[in-house]
Amino acid sequence: MALTEKQLLSDLEGGNFKPVYLLMGEENHYIDVVSDYFEHHVVDEAMRDFDLTVVYGRDTTMAAVVSDAKRYPMMSPVHLVLVKEAQDIDTRQWEQLATYLDHPSEKGVIVFCYRHKKLDKRSAAYKAIAKSGCVYETPKVWDSQLPAWIKSEVSAHGCSIGDKAAALLIESLGNDLGKIANELSKLYPLVADQHLITEQLIEDQIGISKDYNVFELQKAIGRRDPVMCNRIVNYFAANPKKNPIQMLLPLLYGYFLKIMYYHQLEDKSDAARALGCAPSFVRDYEVAAANYKLGKLATCIGYLYETDLRSKGVHNSGNVTDGELLKELIFKIIH
Image (cartoon, rainbow, N blue to C red; front, side, top):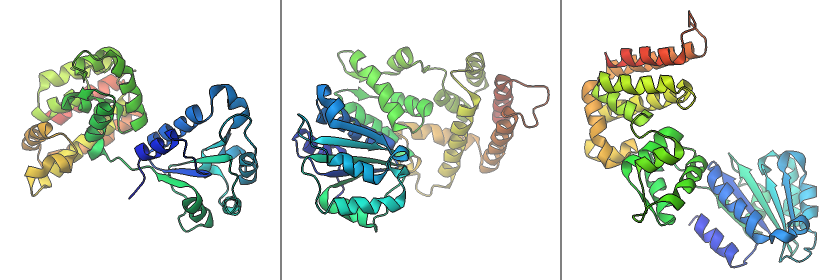
């Protein structure tokens, strides 16, 4: 069974340190959470100048990392060596770590933050880390899992969040877990007695409008509601910095792909899981699918591609603004 973040942090809180930790995977958020714990809790703040060494993979060598790990701590339980962007260390140098781990320092702890990819599990270094230390492979959170992840994250802080409020965060912030967690952290101290994170709280504190956002635009497009579409697009055009067209286009593209996917589901009773949305939103996709057949959806995706090019200056005669491009795009889509 894979080691979880909670299990790892529990071991660290108990003072059970291993000589080396490898934090690796595609989800940077989990790597950040664990490495931040090491950096701010393992060595007392007053002793960090002496017993904490922070280096970056592109600026160091494995020989230097090993040498730092052999330093005896002054007054802390261990001398901590935190290696950020460890994937930038030359692959050939990792063999030196395997040699060191044959007889590691009893007072040294090395933490490797290996981002975006994984250390080769066939290598001597990986096998040595797995034998003598701890490998924490960050779990990938897929788009379909984001609503459940947000609810779990919020619940861990003693709060709750509704489906629409969670969807509002996802549509506005994307699938960057670190960004979502950071924005949520601003809300926890502000929730009322019900401990509920509402759309209004998100609008007031994060600046994401609960009425004029991509999520509401998608619903209006799905209903082919020209009045609501125009209201939202005019709001976006008046606030281009908060609603850049280059952020909106990929979200609309993903929306049309989901409608296409809904069309082709054989078992629509399982649509929520297949589309990665809360069950309460399946009705919106059902309505959109009724209003947009597959041929029209393909045409809409073509409109998005054309608008993307024009927003970047290609075939954009007369220097049409992004707001005007967006208005033209939505008009073509819903008519």
